[in-house]
Length: 127
Figure (cartoon, rainbow, N blue to C red):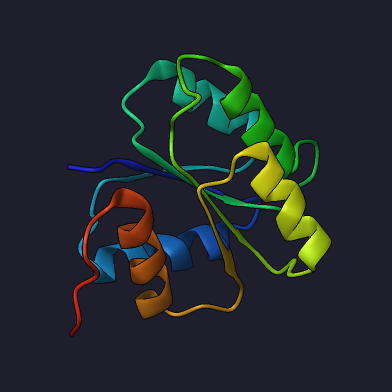
C-alpha cells in the first residue's frame, strides 16, 4: 500500500487532497503543515510518495524538494508538486530540482489520479 505525505500550510487544502486521494483509492495518508515537519516525517520512514504545495512559509515546496533530493536515502522518493504557480519558469525550476510531477490548482480527482498513476507507473483507472 502506498503511503502518502501531504504537505501544505493550509489545513483545508490538505483535507481536499486527502479526500481526493481517498476518492481514487489511496487511504494511507499522513499530513505535514510545512517543509520542516515533512522532513521529520520522511526521515522517520514509511513514506512512499510526497504531495507538496509550492507556496509555504519558512520552507517552500521547491526547497523541500531540493532537501529530499539531496538526501541519498530519499533521493528517489516520488514528489508531486501541487500548486497555484503555473509559470513556465517555475515549472522548469521544479523539473530541474527533480520533481516527479506537477499539478496546477484547481484540479479534480481525475487529474490527480492520472498524474499519480503516471508517476507510479500504473495505468489510470477510468470510472
